[in-house]
Length: 334
Image (cartoon, rainbow, N blue to C red; front, top):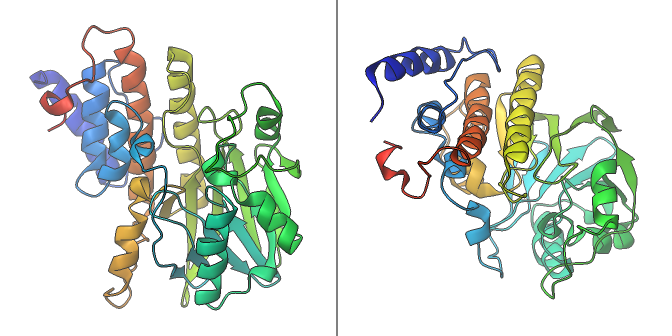
């Protein structure tokens, strides 16, 4: 159980977050395992349990089946479409001069059956894909990239750090159910902008999910309303589980939260629907109330989302040095 003093201090800090007064990086949380998990849990509230799974042992995405399950494609915003699968997401961002595809699933077959077929079902032309942004160098995101790039003459875009990662000795091992490592395309660095027609994506390098994981910020439209989406590009703790990596992850999450706040991001997205509840929200779109959009959760929820990611990473860092482990979180997460 939390001490009264710790509970009181956390209560004030998280109250500031929920009241919309939170400036990322300014909430002081005691550097203990218990405090970080409690802070993550309180920041998650009742609406962010997907990202809170980072506080549990292991990697939530690792439990997904090797053979993914198709789900119906969906129009999420006027210019953003979900063409992914149950376990891993892919997004088509339409512009005045073509389409920017974000991630490409596990392999060419999934790119055919979910991305290409899904786009056609949504009355989008895959031949209009001009850029393919790969959020990071794991095969469930680049697996269909080379197939799509070759077929539609689209330009591949990934961070320089992850192109180098895929060319180095730590590159993912070949698997029969995963597509090939793509040929090097455009290399971007932290803060670069990709523009196609009337739409730009701002890209930020946010390790250590991979050395050059890209997190993205871009505009989306809902009728006359404009919004900003922020896609946290490397969520799971699938890196070497050492103190330095967890601290780096927390710093990346805090930094991206600050960028999102400055740019007015009010739509949190992920490249795995288990973290942003994309499939649940897509279902909710079918019965949305006028003026309400389930993906538009507001800047406060965006800040809380990144705070959960940061606090779970810091909890994992503390677990390496504290005797209490996160093996049975039921006594901590209430």
